[in-house]
Amino acid sequence: MGGKEFDEWFQALYGDRWPGLREALLEKSDAFDYSDGLQASYRLDSASVAAAMALRLPPSGEILDACAAPGGKTLVVASRMAQSCRLLSNELSSDRRRRLSNVLDAHLPAELRRRVTVSGFDAAAAGGRPGERGRFEAVLLDAPCSSERHVLKDPAALEAWSPARVKFLSRRQWALLSSAFLLLAPGGSLVYATCALSPQENDGPVGRLVAKYGEELELDPLPEDGRAERCEYGVLYLPDRAAGAGPLYIARVRKLPGLPA
Image (cartoon, rainbow, N blue to C red; front, side, top):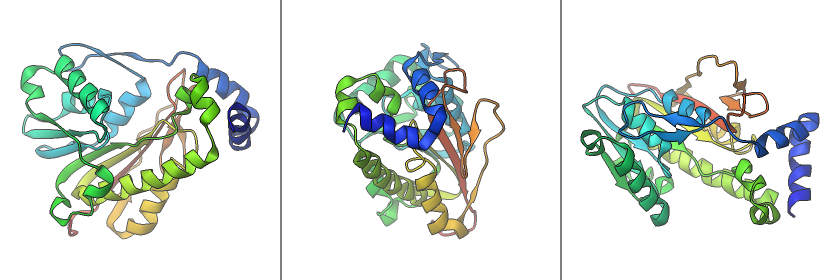
């Protein structure tokens, strides 16, 4: 396990591209100060902004950011939502939830902050509750993932890395994504995002969603962005070809209208 296995794993995935991609992952990202609609700017990778911007927002109703900490994408969604919308910014971890609340308090204007509620439920289980199904007009799921950019910069995390973690996380991602789809109202928009490199964590869960709910959804392709690479179901920003942005995978689906929640 550790660095050698990590490199062998991703060399097998990316071939001759891996050494350059690895080097790009160790360099600074293209983060910038996002300030639209905020009382104080917040530093975000441009691909993270693209993920939050990809969510089609409704004219009214509830929006869910299912795994919201540390809060950057919540800030982007909140800054764009209509006055008749409310946003539920959810984070299961109590420590990360406190950080999320602090970020929202510091960056959102008071009127907007009042329309954003912080919660701490398990988003992977919420879809199993019939009373919650179809509750949200739009759902953003920035799922917990391998986050290889951070792993490479943390010797302890790199030493502890193994392919088993990718498999474990992909199962968790599927539980979150399938639950998010059940929470989504007919006609609503769902964006799935990770900062992972592996197709197992990116197209993999989305492919399972299409296989299970294909008659109830349609893929909603993202507009062309010269920095993003097309995957089977979404797009992938990788820093060696996206001017430092990413890694960030984004896929968008729409639940078909006229179906039971």
